[in-house]
Length: 474
Image 1 (tube, rainbow, N blue to C red):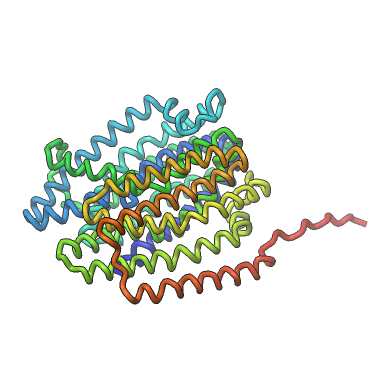
Image 2: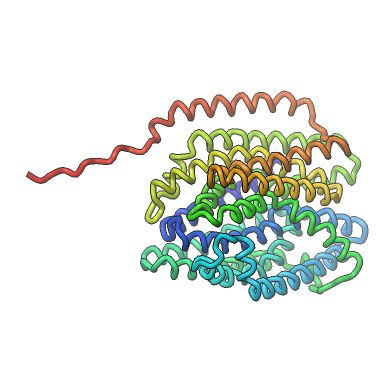
């Protein structure tokens, strides 16, 4: 399990590091003004749909269902079931992309009501429509990745997302040399998003052919039952993204606040992606097999090691992001059009968002226990309650403290989600944590606190150097 976890985490780490390169270039090209806000709202729309499907959601429903069909009826029946899922999901995403394209002004207004009546709204609509082809590719990409995960083939699914960022970085590097104006650069980048999705789909089709045949669109009872579990699971697995969408809606009325929150959240997503994606990818098949075999020892082992790995990565990352927020943001993003003022605002938002990171990771570690039991409704309700908490508090704290107040509300929404999952899981089936985990978790906490102290003591060397005075010629 740990070997698979490391494989998935390594691929996610590589993808997120390339994502930092991508976002650093976006910051240099667009800064944090209206053009950047418009592009990032459109990009967030595509990103949320992608993660609704890919980061644990569809995987959570498809893996147990596919394993059940294969065990009961054999490999041919499992491939046919997968073909129906692939055809149905692909057709639904194509239809949804066409409908969203027609209604895009209303969609963007709902996502960013502060843009209404401004030129930023039309910029966002144009960017989002150019990105829409990606949604047609996201469905089959996600189904193929889930099927490969169910077979234990984690390497391909872990590293295929690299193609998405490589394509965008290549285009943005050309734009930097070309010195295109910000609006034109944003439109070109938006058009590249669909091409990047096609590259990812192509590699999965070439390497994963034959696992979903024949390709069909289906609406039978089995498919309706699968989708009835998949849709709640997709929403439940996208809690962090839905919280950010709620924050962006509230922040859209404040200039540059959407951009500050986006760039701060990108830093939180690095550890969250490494831990969270691996949790959903590796733990669900592991727990499903243990539960189907009625193996309580294997269940306790999987849950304990998963929790240790989650806390061992998330807690030091949280404290590190809080202590070193300003120098990290300055190093990554303060280039070109991204100013020192943007760095200060982004760093403050990052400190508050980082407080929610342990809660996000806890949700990712606990949700597989529900998904493996084919219970997607409980995580869905916990997610929706967390989003409601974030919206209510975001409206209040956003008025008082701006973008940092909205970031604090997002963190509190994440803790609400985690608390509800812990309470419900303990009441229904109980979480199995072995003696080794009980010994190690307090040690992890002590080590993380010691690390934060060391980072804090060395923070002075990371401060901005004083500006040099110009020398006068004699």
